[in-house]
Image 1 (tube, rainbow, N blue to C red):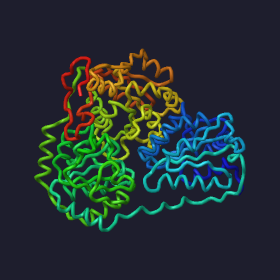
Image 2: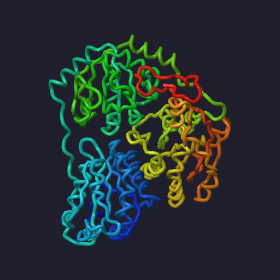
Image 3: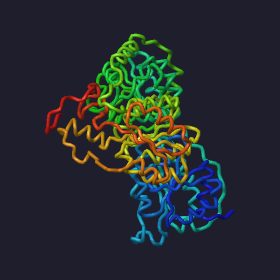
Image 4: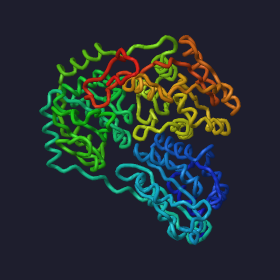
Length: 564
């Protein structure tokens, strides 16, 4: 059959199982939007207030569902507005296909109105960026985009479509999605060396990253931890990849990890790194990280081996498949003395107590967990609230926490929450924001109102850029340069102006009743939760220090001078 390029795009999206796309119309994508109108009964389009939120919506949809997210933007500024969202997806290995329009082919390279070489701009932050130069090439390009986004280490792909490509017509033949290439298999000798290390260790430490979730490896990880009988720590990107109510779980490792995790990495005699890239926020001073013990590293991306931390046995392959092979060949060995030591540390170093009177962030997170039965999907912006969400909400299953870990994108959370709720309408979805991040994406309240997306926007409002201010307090002599926001925004009035319900928390005793009411409302709602300006994220490892030596409280600070 003969179809236009825009119709071919729709047919290829349907082939890939796409039912929802996020975007914003414009001149260069008019043909695509005309096709979306024709296919509106099969593909739902969510128009965001800003293209960046469209990218974050596609990202959140992908993270919550495990499917490939799709976003669309017009040429020039529309395409440029996707860049931060594409970079966010790239850093956190999210499968996403971004489709941009461009000027007609005969106008490319002539500084035409709203022309932009977006394919070149995003090349370093995509697995592939391609300008499609023939309508007859479009179907193959779309199919390749979805395959590449999902093979190996997942990530975003961009397709740039000149307007005359989507207007042109050619023959189209439907095809089922091509199977993905099989993942690499670990070198047999390296696998044997890793097994030798695993069998002979007495104090193993299992550290897990986002690769566990991407590979669907949570069950294999649980069996592996039981066979090895060692403690499990997860990065920010692996929250929920291991059930945090399991006794082996000891919290995050790194700059804001637990004291137990820091002691375990200090005293372990083997580190098993599963699907993690050893971010600087985890290793802190990389030269001092796990320097006393051998390391077994499992990863789908061979470029991660030795990039940040050298490993003694590098197992290149799909995380789930590698763990399953190790499980087949490992006999369970109890390590009672080591696990008793871990339990003693957990009892000695419970979560850091409150530092300010009034509403305590830990109480908010724990109440949220109790009221949702630990089942809610949590998205976050970036800052102190992000760390409190990671520290104090107990994540039980994969894809439960949706957050910008690698790029640290303020403004990510609300768009991502919209995507997550549309992907998982049966689950409660809460976006946890700081007031600094909220001001970066408050316009997306209009998207919530337009589509009546029933999620909770929970703003922890302390009138400061809390995480940056905490660093200024510690390292810059409490010189709070431009981190006291002092914005007179009435969050409640703003929400109502957009057509959103609004609620307020000012006292500890209001936390549970207000959150319960918000969760039961069944409509989009903003909760303005006031917290103290000097609530801190602790533990914290100072810059340049070893991950083994976190601060457990804020030191007495002198006046206008640098502390460290």
